[in-house]
Image (tube, rainbow, N blue to C red; front, side, top):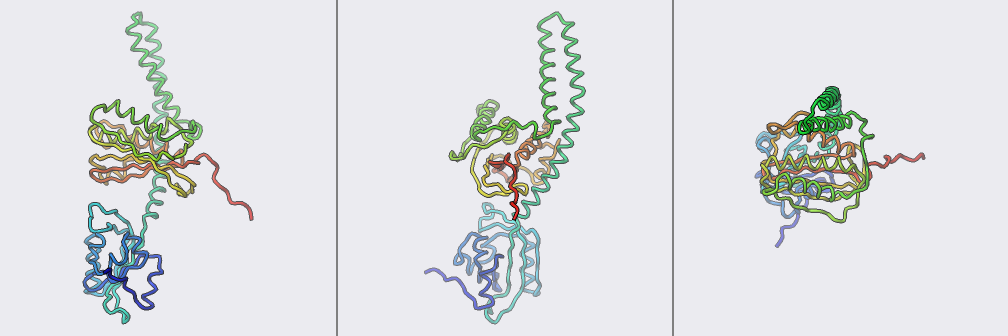
Amino acid sequence: MATPQKTFPPPLGGLDYLASAILLLDAGQQVCYANSAAENLLEAAGRALLHRPLNEVMRYTATLQQALDSALSNNWSYTGQNVEIRRGKAADRGETLHLNCTVTPMQSPDAPEVRMLMELQPIDQQLKANREERLIEQQQASRELIRNLAHEIKNPLGGIRGAAQLLERELNNPALQEYTQVIIQEADRLQDLMQRLLSPHRAVLQAQRMSVHEVLERVGSLLKLEFPATLSILRDYDTSLPELTADREQLIQVFLNIARNAAQAMDGKGEIVFRSRSARQVTLAKRRFRLVIDVAIIDNGPGIADDFRERMFYPLVSGRPGGTGLGLTLAQSFVQQHQGTIECESRPGRTIFLIRLPLNAFEPAPTESPQ
């Protein structure tokens, strides 16, 4: 027979109407009551939470445990900012949540067994918005650095190309002229890249209607050429996705830079999954879009260290010997030109880069009509 949900008379009975997640705990730190918001937060029905120790309902830090013990023994309140918890008993597999937590000791004649009230307020959306703002500011600084770097590189390239042309005129051996042609062609390629970096961003976008799956297939083909034998590429596509308007070459570069980094981190021996989904009514960089296409690039490699994950989009910062430190910086720049975002979650054995691209990025932003 199922255990019924614990109910309390007013005022404790009114806790069910609060938007904050509320847990009432007894002297043994077992759950006496969980309101609807707590059930939603912990993804468990009330009857599955009742009479269970709190450390089985969720996993949390030693600091929070000390606060709970102090609330019981010393009648002290506690407020924690940006506290991390994991849902459920399986801490290694549970989802990490960020929240503000308040623990208040209490005694109520209506519920004498209740000794503590715990209030949990999720702040993941707030942290995400703050992170997006930091990324935008960082990208503006990175863009300025890259433009300055491109300007310094462009000038000597002209001299290198001119010297190669003069040298070619003096060479009678066609075999040697082949080498000068390589110099000239590579100088032209770098000149074109520098020009794109120096040009106004919106001017260099060559937007066209395309399928994101066609772009991912192209990236998969390039990866298989580079890692032909040992790299496994899997697809998890939502084939109902509509076409989006984007710069095809830039998207190829974005997905290729991220997927190649994953393959190199695994020494070409591992599994990469390309996954596509859609999301509706999403806010990206303070603008709301009706439809967003989510592309996830998932690998089962060693993961990204926490300290490096905070810096990996900075220019000239690389996580491997011989890396240029420009791949992820350019990827982030190209995605932001499409008014999208890149997010990363990583732990050993599973790293996810989520690229969010609005379907209508090149439509004018909606304006409020006059009253």
